[in-house]
Amino acid sequence: MMALEKNIQPFDHKIWLASPTMHGDELKWIHDAFDKNWITTAGENVNECEKLLAEHIGCRYAVGLSCGTAALHLAIKLAGERLYGQPKPNEGTLRGHRVFCADMTFDATINGVAYEDGEAVFIDTERDTWNMDPAALEKAFEIYPDVKLVIIVHLYGTPAKMDELRAVCDKHGALIVEDAAESLGATYKGRQTGVFGDYGAISFNGNKIITGSSGGMFLTDSREDADKVRKWSTQSREAAPWYQHEEIGYNYRISNIIAGVVRGQMPYLNEHIALKKAIYERYREGLKGLPVSMNPYDAVNSEPNFWLSCMMIDKDAMCRQVRDEKEALYIRESGKSCPTEILETLARYNAEGRPVWKPMHMQPIYRTNPFVTVEGNGRGRTNAYIRGSGIDVGADIFRRGLCLPSDNKMTEEQQDRIIEIIHRCFL
Ligand SMILES: *Cc1c(COP(=O)(O)O)cnc(C)c1O
Image (cartoon, rainbow, N blue to C red; front, side):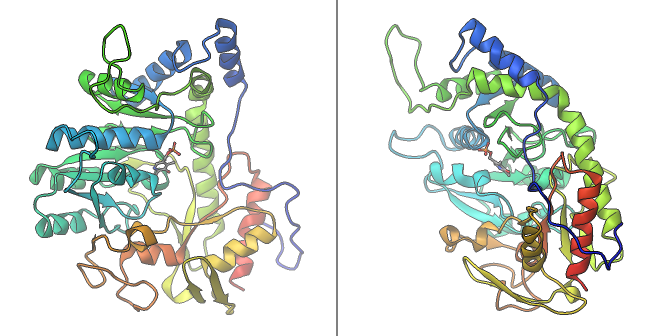
């Protein structure tokens, strides 16, 4: 590591949080699509990449869609129909029903609940994997015993406590939609994430562990569900000589060009995971001695894909930091720091970090939705900004945590520089 006295040079090229890593095979499959003139939402790339993903993940069917959000939407819609029947044409399947939702996540995890007219009830996060807290979920069923659907995510590629969450859901007869958008290739008790829910979804967005530039997949073992998603995603055409419609349709199918990119990326998934893991471990070593910890995972039962490396600052090493809805301020303090200081400092050196996902219960669009936590004031809303020690887990991780530059293509020297920059924030 660099000596402390030396000036740190800004990076010539931006160090990204996570950018696409292409290998060349992707172009081969794009050319193949051009050569055969399958420039549409069908073709060999679509079939092959569905096959590759289903085989790798260990599910019977993977249906290629335009994005992970579409996969989650149709997964949620399937669950809604199974639970509550087919809705009227102008209503969502979840109208009049509550759904238990992961709280600390990207909003795409739960957009489908709103698309289907459901009411999201947010479940607080636990501190061992930064995912849905089984104890808070159990408490939520005590408050809302009628709920039959739970949406779980594996944040930053770290598997959630699936056995505990599944046990709570089974006890209350609830279905699970599993958002594995960030966790492709991660395993829990030896099985790939994406197979633990009643319905699963993955994403090939540009910053994910492998990418198609966009794209996603719906995962299932049910032939019937796979067929239904294929039909819904291609405008719900009935088998008839003309365009015949009995249900609302969507234009959600993956393109054969994008499927070609995914097909070309798939052989490199494990290589990407190994690179991400090395980055995580290098941070863990490099940040030793600072009052911080890395995003945690269950090393006995799970192997994350280490999509993003994150860190959290110890409570008593936080300088003062205030955030309103759009801006943040902090007061510099010797021996302490905060996410805002570290992110702003990294940006000055041309490196991209990010705050951890701002919990959904803190988002203006969901301000009036219920939130269930076992910490803080229990049921109802907690305000992270005015409460002292009693804030909920999600708000606490948001306050003290940040995502570190985790790009595959970052060199060891560059990562050392980033580590040194972080050390200096605490001087
Ligand atoms: C990226 C992501 C999605 C959505 O995937 P898109 O392909 O971008 O639509 C959903 N959930 C989580 C947690 C994600 O990170």
